Image (tube, rainbow, N blue to C red; front, side, top):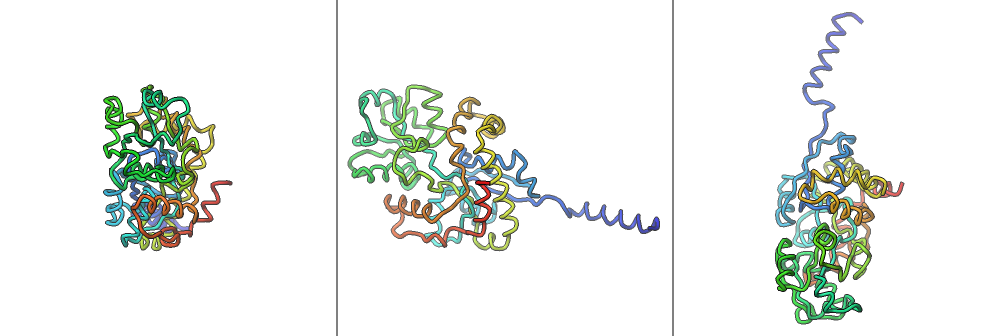
Length: 334
């Protein structure tokens, strides 16, 4: 090869590098809330699983589905980690969104009560003890509200008359229990760990992560990775890379020997949580991060929404789930 040809090839390679050929693909992925339910999303970035797939992912945290889903529909993010039940509501309203995998399967919720209320209810207290209680929840139609309505209905109680649901922001739960304004609260992690293991003086009336309460909350595909149908169809190879990276993160979390490393990697993501309590919360959840989205999962979400009066008609599985990635879901067990 003559010197001129070598220089020409070298110049061409340099130009290719400068023009971005072979560089990582930039993507923006949203999390509807800055929450441990999106742990596989954060971990896939921190452990370099996205990078291994040739992706440069920016994670954008929102303040709920009401802000996250419009960002997805408007193209500010191309995928989002968000509640499956919220996706069903949005799809029922006519928006074309589908899920490609589950991020967290079991609702990481609990009904927490002050020890003083527990003492008043007695040692034989059970979930039926909610009758007559004042329970802090999110606003009407939010998960905490729907969960309490479902629990009451499952027990044969009327959620409108047999207990009092009091909508409030989650940071008001503890002050409201301390002042005696409410008797308990429907929380999600890490709130209950902070109360029971951190503050002390609180206990569980039902802990869904321990398998307690109605079965509808177990393996319900609570949080899923979602995208607009047209974008998913046009970017299938990119989506496969994202799903592969997040399943790699789910497998890493599921291995108990990685617990300390996972907790350490999450400390900068959740700087306001005491490291020991963050680790304990993650430990309680490591078996809940699974990728499968089955017909039973969508049935459970429909059941929750319809029992709570949020939906009148069930949303079909095929309408909200893209099964193109089911072969990758199976890799979780390998």
